[in-house]
Amino acid sequence: MLSIIKNRMEQGCKTSKYPKEPIELYHRFRGLPSINKECKAEIIQQCVDICPQDAIDPEAKTIDLGRCTFCGHCEIISDGAFVCFSHNFDLGTANREDLVTSGSLPTLAKHSKKHFKKLFGRSLQLRQVSAGGCNSCETDTNVLNTPFFDLSRFGIDFVASPRHADGILVTGPISRNMKQALMDTYNAIPSPKVVIASGCCSISGGPFFGSEQIIGDLSSLLPIDLYIPGCPPHPLTTLHALLKFFK
Image (cartoon, rainbow, N blue to C red; front, side, top):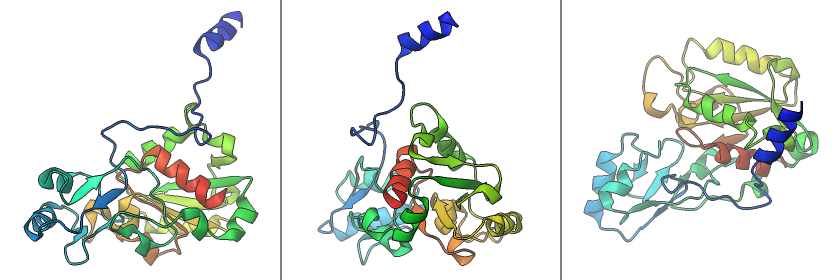
């Protein structure tokens, strides 16, 4: 016991002080992109041609974050002349159309449903469902339970049974084999309940968009309350979205 106490005192508190104090992410992190609408048309077209997700609209000069995998090819090929990814991890939105952006997103707290805050403001239990994902989104969601992020200190937890949950957090492109399991889980959650689409796969199908083996869009099955884009979403992106929307 004494060795445990000694070790604890030597290590100190490992939990991040976010959100009380700002946190700086690694310089290679790609967050909210900014777009130069004055960029030359030929450079924009190069970015459109290289985008594996067809996420760039050359006419409107926007990026669909619901489809974007944040691969950074558009920034690299244009040398930042058209697209430049910032370190801003505030990417969550309440509406799908808000993810089509030229460099700004609405303040999530202003668009959150007030009755959700009233119902779940002090305690939120979520059931996570991997509907055919590659395990990247699932892994970065699990990271929230580590001492550094300590999700439970905010009254938010992931539970094993949908009957104990207030909502469902879905990752993956919704494969046809997982459709029934997903719907059964959703129906088992007591009302009122929330639906969170995490990662570009659940939002739009991601890299699997157009495949006959996936549903491709969670909104075609369930009403979505919160969108968290990314491939995968950084743990801080998920944490920030949950706190802004529900707290």
